[in-house]
Image (cartoon, rainbow, N blue to C red; front, side, top):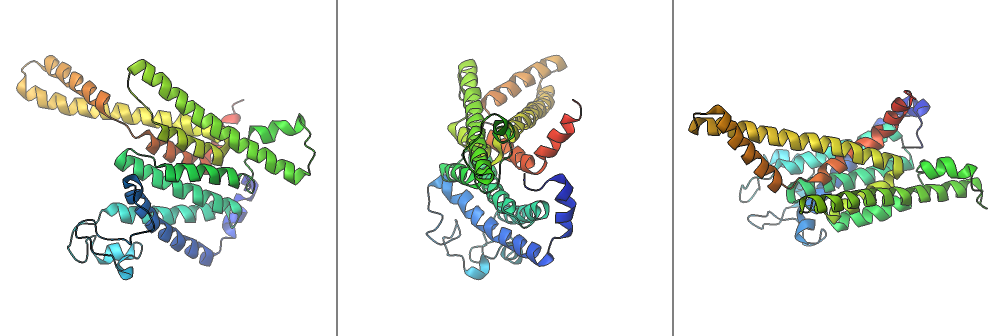
Length: 321
């Protein structure tokens, strides 16, 4: 993302090759199909390579012509060819989202290493978002390789963050400017991972001490280590801050919706409207305490927003100072 500065963004978009764009979209659909396998199998501890794909209900193997991204789901009407069991529309949605994400990366970053980096990052984020939403799990087999991949990419796609901006004027490295830039980018990636992981770990520890129950698991910590490795400190802080806001709004909205529904229910049983509201509020609080919010969904979603629009936000925000 940091390779493509605002002055060149319109030029990059004007030079997009429709053939490359179509190929990248189709590639994204294929990766989306594989991502569906990861989302289903990784929480169960099943290999994503073997055995071959099969219907979860009738166990019949899925033929190659029934395993084409998007098209097979549409042709089969979202049902298994053999037993007619319903196939979740999630498979179709993830394939389309992955294809659109790859296309958006190409449109935004052009035919550069940045596109490869953020396609890989977005692929991992989509998988983790949907896995957390469905199972409340963030598999190590996605977060830990993602962390290593983010660190490795920092050597090829500069993470233009705090170390890269301030250290060159303070420390003179005994290397060429190109090697120095790569080393500083590597440091930025490590610092981003450390800040992201430590912030979530610290917030989870405070929540545990305050409420006596676990608020965030180590999966969120590893997720933010991966996010920090890809994005650096600045956009990692942006991710945590915006995810906290969106997650809080979601939590409060959930409580309000439950309270309104329970108020309507209790008002039919109780003549006193105030008593009905009190009972409904107590019930909503019980639901809130027992509900395990998949915070990884918000962290992953805001990380995706960050690598497209985070720098723009900071430029806009900087105009006020």
